[in-house]
Length: 388
Image 1 (cartoon, rainbow, N blue to C red):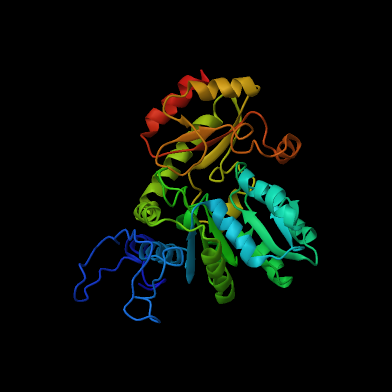
Image 2 (tube, rainbow, N blue to C red; image 1 turned 30 degrees about the horizontal axis):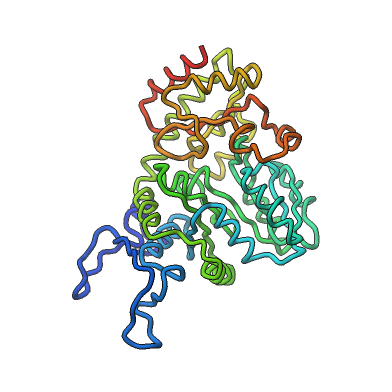
């Protein structure tokens, strides 16, 4: 199926899974799970249908990669065993020792750990800037900068970066722009259409959607970048398994309907918390009170299901509230059909130095919520009793 001919939900269901009606084929409506690690051939120099070894390529994984690329309006998709595996492969593909990254200061803690504690050993430089002001990105680059790295919305403060404007800055300086699109998924935001060069996903989140499969993805249009990523995907081997590829494809088919409900519930939760006396502030790009609401509206088709808020109190108040919840699961991650809630300072961002974390605005009472698709009245009642 072509990338642009069909609508989003049609591509999510059908791309990569066209039934095979050739003689001997079975016409599967759902792509089979190809568990074989190796593929036999009749002639020494002719791999069967191009398949040799599952690390190099697998029919189930290939179907998923085609589906993901089509949803981002891209030519090439690559999937990995986790979001961090995808990030690691991308860095190995595009950087050399001595190269520099200009990065948003509000990134997932695991990404910062990768930059600061792993790749720093190999003389990679990183400068963190407040990329909500595009000119700060320009100031953060130098003659060694090869990548600009954004999350938008960011984690967990839901800050928005102007992808179009920063893409212009990147390309003026012959730098590649990488955008982590995990929080919104291609249903609500397509960074390549806005000028980005590379899109990264933790497919564990909204793309998989059911908290039962770990994965990551790199999606690109540029042929040279695709060739480098394909080489390192095979050479380093952190690929997505056939079974996880199947689960991720199954999740993708309902991405549009799930995200509509996630967003509907998130708006209701945000409205409720905004008027509660024990809540200091609510951060959700869909609210007009969000400082970048207009920017979010201009570059996205929706606002997602994640919001953050601050309890009016101290860390013990925040912990007490979280531990009294009954429907919201106190757990890391996001994007599943079930509602998850967490305290970034002690959970997802615990690896970030306290001084750096607090300077960025991640206080001890900041709570992040991944609003699920349960009955909204039950979610509100759960928040109400825990706040009480």
